[in-house]
Amino acid sequence: HVQLLESGVGLVQAGGSLSLSCTASGSIFTTYGMTWFLQLPGKEREFVAGVSRNGGNTYYTEAMKGRFTISRDNAKNTVYLQMNSLKPEDTAVYYCAADRGPASYTVPFTPAQYDYWGQGTQVTVSS
Image (cartoon, rainbow, N blue to C red; front, side):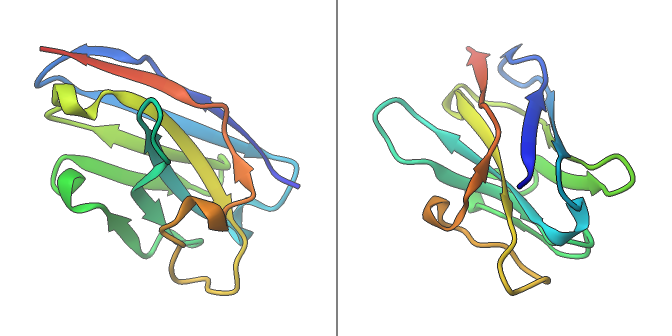
């Protein structure tokens, strides 16, 4: 099974940028689609961005399009989330997740379809 370890600094002013990374170990990274979710207190995890196994396809929730960029470096077993033009409403705990489903060209958009999760990173955007 894959283990996921997140890293990144989580405090920034509105309009600023943050980069999160998630490094996988324990399994073959290229067999997993990789995704970032966010979670607000008392709410379910929500899809933010996803990247297919070879990095060829990326997906974003509408609110993050044009501001967030997901990428992966398969040589480093790492997926990244570059967050620009951050807003206070982006404040949440961000989780990376790995999917080994049958479709290599896409990723699931619902958290229930994921078995492997990072530990979560608090991102706080101050106004």
